[in-house]
Length: 197
Image (cartoon, rainbow, N blue to C red; front, top):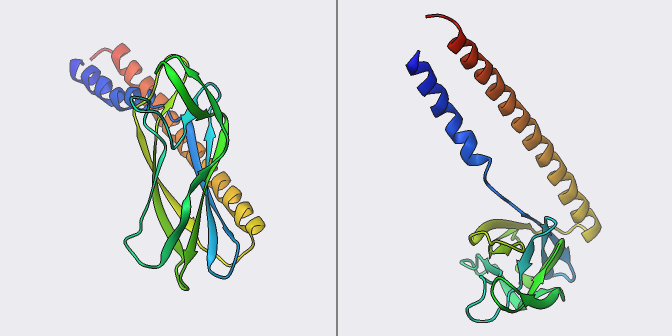
C-alpha cells in the first residue's frame, strides 16, 4: 500500500509545479500593408489587471526593457526606423525607486519593414519583464510570427482574432480533460487507500 501512496504523490508533483506558473502578458501579432513593398508589423500585449509591462527604454539599473529581436538572417526584408511604442505612463516605481515608463492593460509596438516579393512570414522574439506593486517576474521570451499577406488590415485582424479564439477553446478543452483525469486518479487512489489489502 505504501507504494501506491508514493506513486500517487509523484503523480501530483507535475500538477503542483504547473499551477504556480504566471503569465500576466499575452502577445498577438497583425500585419498591415501600406504600400506595394512596405508593411507595419504590430505586436499587441494584453496585460492582466494589476501588472505592468516596461518600455523599450528604461534607466540604468532598472528593470529589463521590452526588446524585440527580428530574424534578419535572410535578405528578404529591411527595417525602416525603430520599433515604435505607445505613450504609456511614466511614474515613480517603488520597486526600482526611479521613474520608469510602463504600460497597463494593453499596448502595441509597431515596426515598419520593406519586404521583397515572395516572403510569407517574418519571425521575431520579444523579451520582457512584468511587475505588480509587490513583485517582479523573471524576464520572459516569447516567439512572434508575422504573416505577410496582400489582404487588407481588416481581414488580417479578424483572422487573428478567430485563430486566437479557436486556440483558447482548444486549450480550455484540453485543460478540462486533464483535470477530469486528475480527479478520477485522485479518487481511485483514495479508494485504494481505504480498501484493505
